[in-house]
Length: 79
Image 1 (tube, one colour):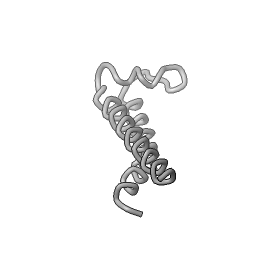
Image 2 (spheres, rainbow, N blue to C red):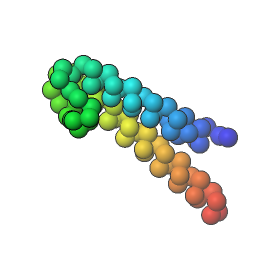
Image 3 (cartoon, rainbow, N blue to C red):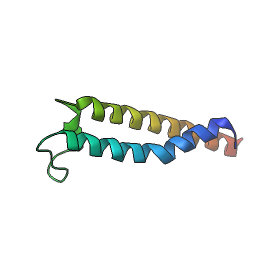
């Protein structure tokens, strides 16, 4: 496996774990936040919003890398 496919694969493995961990940290830092009653995006505003905003950024980067990996694999199989 080359480096072009390894990095997106690693992102695909660890980004969901990081997403859940950051979501849990952000919800603990927000007094009165209930994961069953509130939306996760509410954690992106107010005090300590940096935690969830970093979470959104990491998730977006993960999705971009996985899209590039899919494109590489698709083009390799066609060519």
